[in-house]
Amino acid sequence: MEGVFSGYLFFSLIDLRRLIGIIELGLTGALVGFGGSNASVVAAVLVYRFLTVVPTLTLGLLASLTLRRKGPEVRARQQPEFPSP
Image (cartoon, one colour):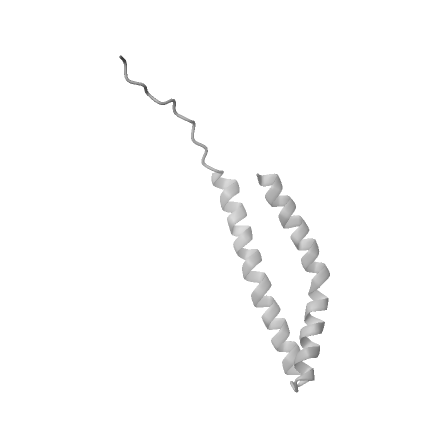
């Protein structure tokens, strides 16, 4: 299970790096097109992206460290007790 999580995290980070420039450019262009000033729009877009990316990565890292430290709880299956005849 840990390998699946690590692979998912790795590939999601690759996709994130590839999309960061495209999303900011499109959002900035749209907001400037609707009449926003260049400096305030760029600042707003960067703050927006920071607030959407960093908390998610922080919570994911904390969850990963917590699961790695404690590990999943595995319980042994108990045999059912049958009454004696």
